[in-house]
Length: 309
Length: 212
Image (cartoon, rainbow over all chains, first blue to last red):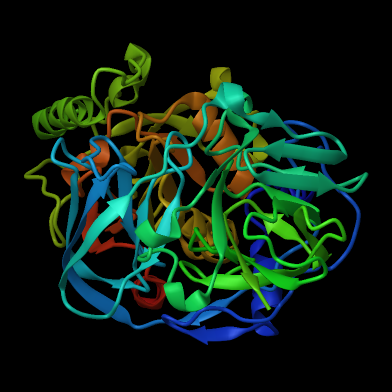
């Protein structure tokens, strides 16, 4: 049995590991964004079948800082939003969830675009998550403590590129999809969420998040210049993947920047649930063409934000 | 299987089909209602779905001891609530924790990260844990492959069953998970019904019930 227990199939780091991590890592108040923790992995080489395209199985040996969240339960009656496409036309069939640390509720947008979830109970640190990382990018909106019935207004759901347009993960080297390029060191452990995705869905897909239309999930106060949603959600890299983004805004060569990610799952190790945390420092390349990580990197596929220092 | 349970099962299946649309994968007949089973020794009704009421028997396909057996779909066996019915205490079962889970539910995943350790701690005291997996990440009925990946992801060493036709729909809607039922194995009475993974309520309750 002991041997079997060492064969954890990814995604979830062991309870012991998580507990140990939580004991010495940041504690945040509900609603606060995480700070610091430029996430260099604790080290170690790949211990799994990861490190190549479709790698699945085993344990990621680079646990994140872990986040203990003190959250009181919030009484909610219902939460809803109007889900639209980028042209503000209502979108039907977009999956949404209201998920707290303790319980999750599922819903789908109707023909009108309304995606209302009835709850009538208290949830710990609830977030409204839209998209599921299959057809639509997954993002989270941390819910305020009041009122009990919340209307989040209009939310733009972002259709991800098709799987055929996705890029396979290499054993090492760079993979680019859309505007996002990840570079994996040789020996990187790539751990996919095999509970969620089938093998043919394990390709990198990315889309830019329209910040002006996504203020619920990407708080303008974070100061991001650009943000991107990627899939397959929850794929982890150990060590973290280097990130390169186009310098679309024409920042001067050598300009310093920060890379942040959003915690999308309640057991997220790398960012607080439904909040953002810095995972890397970055700099504009000498030729001015790209923003590239200089320390830290992308430990997990989630939403990515970039801001100038 | 009781009429109530059959009716609930059928209703759940119809509701699930309606919810998932025409692309919902067909559930293999052998997995419907766990393939069926009989339990002549099980308590008679009336049955109910609330605290203080007697749990109707239900059958599932699953792994009784997934840490000690193959996870190949051909290794699935019939599990039933009646397997844990212990009116005289001869089986050493005092309480049953029945849990629902879906792959789309991250709170369910968090709960199952700790259940094997809880099983190690509480099984010698008379608690049996039975987890039921009812949907995948896209809300399709859970498949044997989903169950295999689940038990391997969480190193489950407690019973895990498939519930693709959501027989547990008698106790909570399919749009919500997890659900935890604590059942007295002597009478099959529901002692606690709790929506959500609320450790601070569930485990003290189990501690107190086992101490009685």
